[in-house]
Image (cartoon, rainbow, N blue to C red; front, side, top):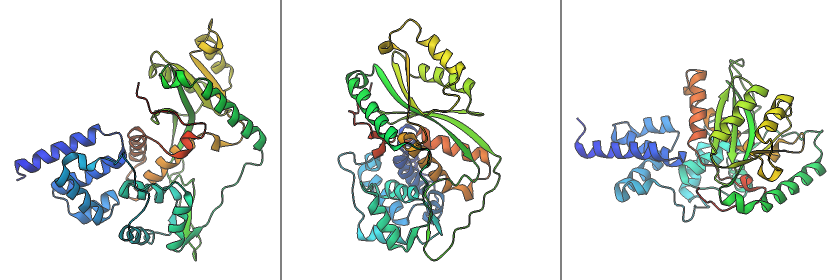
Length: 352
């Protein structure tokens, strides 16, 4: 029977898990909670995909410092791996044949609280493990680079002009996009062992879920809502949802030129919402990115990170409904702070 001390610890850890928005902290607490619940370290290693050394160090930190020992060190995130940690990572990279860059980034961030400023550091780890680039990303030939550069300057100027309103919480900046999640979805950056070809099995390709999402440019949180498809009716419903989630705020939205973003139904809705108001006072002001260049929208990185995280557990997930639950859980419990989120200028982190 579990004694009272362990019961109290489990309750404290569960409360911490329920209250924390950062998935890295949740993972640490969950590992320690499973230890107290009697799981073997090897079982926890399989469930959470973490090293035995990390489980030991997290448990030690909790026992020494209490619940605060599981929080992220916001005073200064580490920018390096110890020699022992580096060897652990290199051994981990030998466990399968195909990798995505996001998987390595999240391994280091979730397990070791290490985030490199330069992608070169991640590439060096791949190289040291005998893993090389096996797939390139094609540039859309229709993309007009000059138009992309001009649009970036336009957005930077627009945000700078409204900076005071943005930081005061009067104007909320959201970067919006749709994501289509499919069973066996394998889009992204792929790394594989240098001496092997890549073969990927795709199953249940007809299972699909569309999500509308908008990342808050100031605070990094994501407003997520599932739909059956991307179309004008769902776009209008999602815009109404954004208004409900932003009381007493005007919205400045950035999105792509999808046909249903430009439809008469959507334009009529925006006209009704903004009727009688000057442009500076519009409830919703929409700005389109330059065409044919998805990299202009930082939310693309968020979709990739969420898919990468879910993909790591696909072998253990029994159904598409479970995949959707994990995908949504990750997006709703993670605050995003990657560099591209500030590609149009940095703002203060002010909670309103």
